[in-house]
Image 1 (cartoon, rainbow, N blue to C red):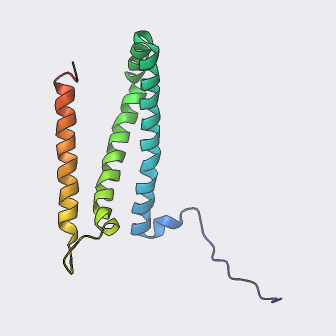
Image 2 (image 1 turned 135 degrees about the vertical axis):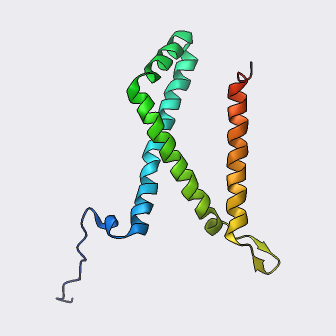
Image 3 (image 1 turned 180 degrees about the vertical axis):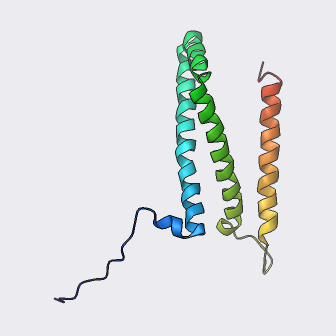
Length: 133
């Protein structure tokens, strides 16, 4: 057995602040907290909808609290940042080829943004026209 001590690199709690890439990566990963909390709020609303009109109206009343409004604004910014960074990572996740040539990153990113805009317009249109009613 060796008597040498293995080298253990010291790591502070703010290690990711030393490198811009790591800082942006940790910021992107941190946005998942807001996405998760927002999904829990939506599940709470779905449960209220199942319980009836009184519970649904109570849930809507809770959402008019300024704390929820501020949270929704922060969650929107976090979700947009998450989406934008994901779109820029998409070409690295899917390698598309045409014959022997690999497609550049630009068309993949553009298709993602177009799909995002189309889906947003459709959702806003459905909501603006009163949903399914």
